[in-house]
Length: 439
Image (tube, rainbow, N blue to C red; front, side):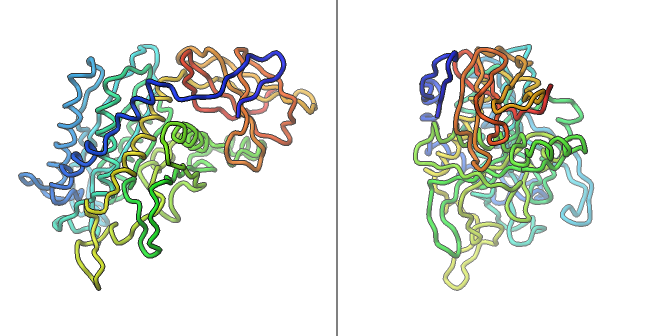
């Protein structure tokens, strides 16, 4: 809901931007199926599988690399792809020998040389069967996580033909099943090299729509997992969180709300469910190492998991088929979930940076709320949205537009939560920023 107050610029209702809508419509079920058929053809993609002609994880990495590179020629020089190899020592647990691993990366360089922002989107290329150490058996990994990897390929196909101010890195990480190894390597690299990494989106199992046990079938819902209390939190951060009651307003929660807002705006017949956990109960994913390093990271995952087709040997038992086979992929569901990623990343990379030094004035007691901020460090904002919601609500309920660097609203900060986001010349919106107290 958009609102205005006296003296504020009139705001029309938010609508789909035609160029982005066309990109969303370009996401193809046929392309996703073709890529997935190629990916599962390598027998196993177990992280510890041996190099063989046409079989194993290295052959699969080369396949994904070739797909990424096939789009370089139409990118105007903006797209480059490589495999970032690294050595992993045996740990006596899930890595039984020293191993070379590699993350397959496609970098779509931002067009603005003054904009150093980076957005990362991932899926994991490795697969497994019932025994986590079985590197020999067929492990097609169609959904876990072939679905996430082919979503990356399809996004690169479409997005590489466009230009964005900020940089987007599409990465198929290795070693997820052996302990989030490839993601941890990349997160450390981003930290050590001081990347201005604004957000990381992990796609892990986004192609199955049928649950095991309960026999639910629903391809109209997608989960986004986000941390409330950050895994990386200093005592100063914790003190500010406690004093402002910001347990539900971490940067990852703001990213999750943004995904729901933009995803549902552009993708029909899909409801994005905000799950207030870092991941599923007592489980983790490739976004977790990024969260531990202090980056904003979330996980996208199908609504209903099917444990008959996840981490299972391929077999028939008591009339029930087991195994993560391509037969059980819902390509329409995979198309929609891929389109969500594309819409969100396009919006984020097109928008200016977030407003800086966002604060709520506490110099006096008042039933009104005064918010102040500074211009973004990257890009140019043509205006700003001040967002507002009741403390019991999960999503922002009202948006007030201004071209100034402050706004006073006749609503009490005791009763509402607020945030501020930058708006670019073409209407692209940055992530919201939750205010801290200022005088």
